[in-house]
Length: 107
Image: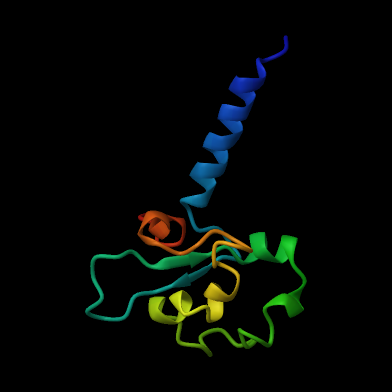
């Protein structure tokens, strides 16, 4: 029995959306500092990026190979630094209030 293409596509998209909402092994979770309540921590899907890009695309610039070496802020990202070097609306999706939940994921 063949499933209709729209159903298959819908199931695939639902699976991807559910997977994006959960941190998995290999992901980097940026824990919030004390007093930064409200916004959930950002989750960086390292292996998704690693599958698409070679290590030198991000290391050693803009990110050192040591976890926590950079202080990542939304201001820096919106200035085109760190994640914002690619997440600028040209290379990858832009960082905005409409895209918060792509990184800041409720558990």
